[in-house]
View 1: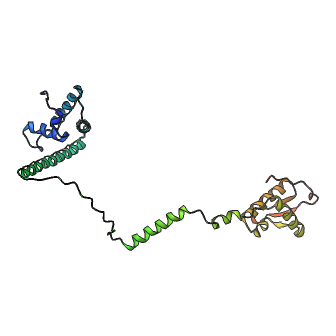
View 2 (view 1 turned 180 degrees about the vertical axis):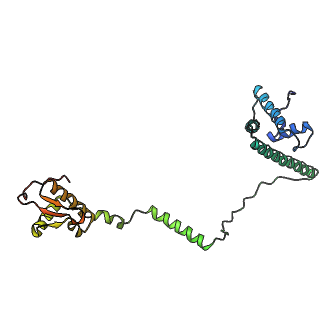
View 3 (view 1 turned 90 degrees about the vertical axis):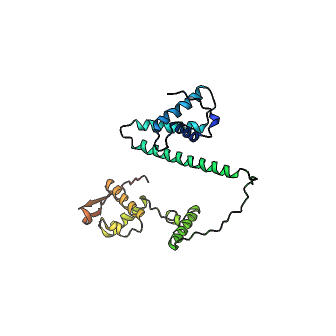
Length: 244
């Protein structure tokens, strides 16, 4: 490969260098073997680095891109490499066209007096001109209202079921169960829960029944809904301990 003797300042950017390398082949962009151009471009960048010259980041970025294309092209399935090469050809073609147009505009400007004028500040028009379906507007409104409500503290009603909830202790149900058994002589097991006004009362009643069975204050005979609860006489004063 012939040794490259380019100077960085000659080229406006990596695209300019690639077009110069393609021009040396004296073929069109569509016919040039891109892999050969990649080798020459990478050699140029390496030469610049060896001479401790300041290499622009644009040239290094293009070098990394070309190196990736070269790596992918070595894979058994290289459809991606072909796609990347075509993208590069397209960019080079557009860049070449822009250079040609710029050169023609420069030629047209020769012989005329012209001056550069800084861009004027134009006040932005903030008028909203888009048209939306009513359903989308309504949906956006609901989303905005929902976000606004989520930023507010929860209402008092949200805590009312927690703060005002009556907690029934297990020990408070002992005497209730004993009084009902003394007055009726016996009770169905499910009857103790039929008049419960809350889940807390039902749980406390059930735990109280279990504690009384363990202390042998009551007996439970039968199964399911037909189970009968009776008071064990002579055990009214048995100690009932329950850790709440």
